[in-house]
Image 1 (cartoon, rainbow, N blue to C red):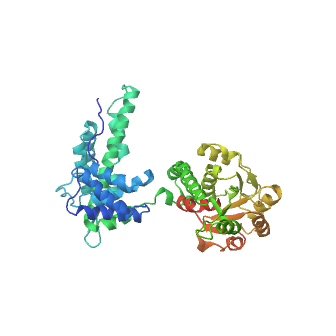
Image 2: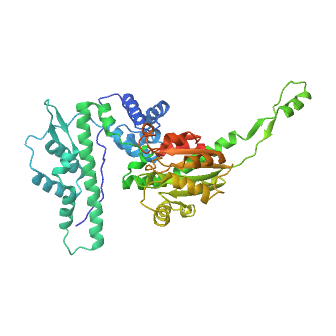
Image 3: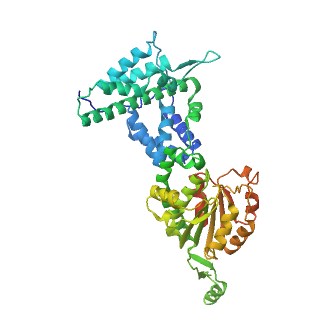
Length: 461
């Protein structure tokens, strides 16, 4: 059996019913509401870009708008969803007069997918939404849900059915090739179903209402305490890019601050030779010193993901500091600087999990023991050129807080910053020592997303 490639346009036609400029501006507003930094000038650039493409080609329209409105590859999935909402046709296709049952539908779909008939598969997707995705509301209104379609049309079972048709005597390579093609075609069917369900909802509720429900957090806005495995892998890839952005910002700030304080004596001496007209200010030469960074991270339970990403980020920024030393703890303290020196973030995390000796008793956080261990076990770690960064929720399980040791470390340090992933409204409640620790550190900040890390980490240098 010969299996071709997936062809055709996955976006569908663009509905011409609404003025194009209004659609672009609506898309820009929706992107901004979703966290994408799409400005008004970006929207104007997007409108101008459309003058250079064929408006009858949805694929070209999509790419032109993406080039002007998306500043990061991580924003593209959100853009594609909102583009479908704002530019898809809003006129729902007519319903099937006598919808067939799921077995007959699946048999027809299997044949079309096997033949690679993309036009027919798209038509079947619209039929499926009308036949299986329709839900009657309490007030007589109809809604359409893609999830109800996939409950009736089992795509996993359909894939097995397609592969079984090849027989057992087929070469393994050809079978794998066929499987890849079928997976792509079924993914296309899924996308068509989701797009058609969205179009029907846009027609019923309006683009703005559907866009609000379709928006999911951007990678940089995902709560680090509640990551799925897929999100965790994606954010690990983002760590290096985030480090590069922060390093560029720090270098720019250092260049702007190259001049030191005004040297009044030299300024007056210089002005005496000209009678004070003009006055040329003289500045004292500024000593460019990079601070040392000491990171103290709670890696217990739900804090582990947040602490891991921040530790990786700090080590990725090691060029911006004279020295970076990292300490991890649960109810015992261990230096993990060498474990995090691994260039591969996945390997670094694996080394941290496998080799760090951070549990002594019951595996519950003990901030008092960690602060005591840092102050007494590593007396040279914190000094007048050191920025102390503490990562954790400050919940000590009603054990000694170590507040006195923290105060001593803060006095010895150049600067002390505490990044707390818990909402500020919960600080000081229950077994939280955050309110007490805040009195001693220079900054206690709520931080649990990459966007917040990007804003706060430059303050360490």
